[in-house]
Amino acid sequence: MQPKVSGDRISFHVDIDSVGRLTEDWREKVDYFDNSYLRSAEKAAEEEVARHIDLILHTMQSKYSVEVAGFGTQLRIHYPKVWQKVKQNWDQEFSKIPVTYSVKLKINDYGLRRMKK
Image 1 (cartoon, rainbow, N blue to C red):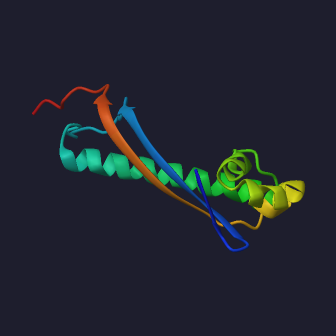
Image 2 (tube, rainbow, N blue to C red):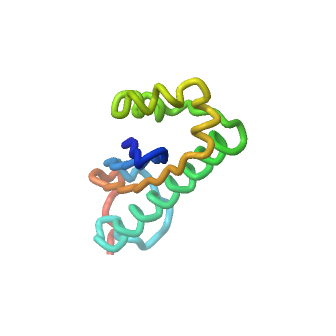
């Protein structure tokens, strides 16, 4: 979670980089260790994470106008003078601040067995 300040404009970029395990998939005749399958599974997981992030950001910024994820803490740490200017109305300020993100997921373990041919 990286704050950026340019003049009076505040923005944030969040890098999500995670490693996980593919535990179960009920499709038949799939070689779970095939690189193209793994790439498609990683991409599908990234898209699902992005969908959840969009929903969470929308809920925080538009529906409730609250910041509960630590953006303010990061702004305070990296730009203390800017934080002093906005901290009194932080929830309202945050509701107008652009937040971008990138999602990178990697499958590194498999709870599945190779399909028998």
